[in-house]
Image (cartoon, rainbow, N blue to C red; front, side, top):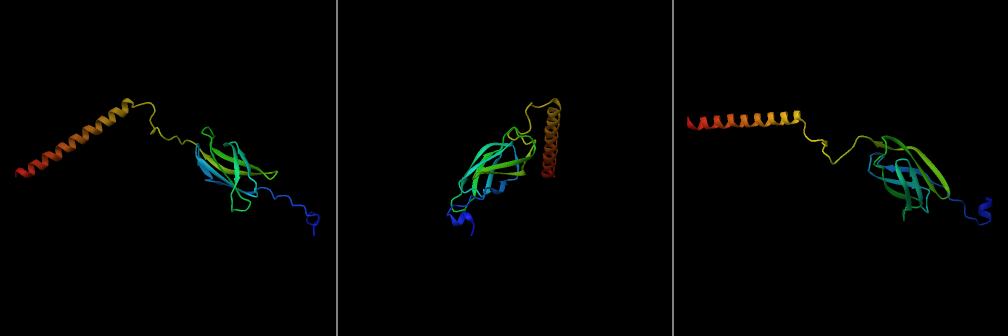
Length: 146
């Protein structure tokens, strides 16, 4: 029997383990869920990709804690470590998540308006469509008259 058990003292908590970040590949501004085992009282997670995030114990899940955060919009593309602090201990998982670069939604890819080349191409397509429609209509008309 160990000295801790003989005196009735509670053994120290095991500390954090098994850091899981989902999704592990994420775009800037995406929502990230961090789950950690060995954090019965919760704690916090840190990374250069997101702000300090509180980890809250999951009831009915033993010593597991979970936090939800948003990846910084200005995070650079690449791999990031996550460090978890709980139960008086720390654990770092190297390359726990990968931030994708170049994703910029909502603008439809155009921010400067149409260029003269865009207008010329669009005008040519409209002209071709009108001409093709006219030819089709003329052929149908000619078939009815015969």
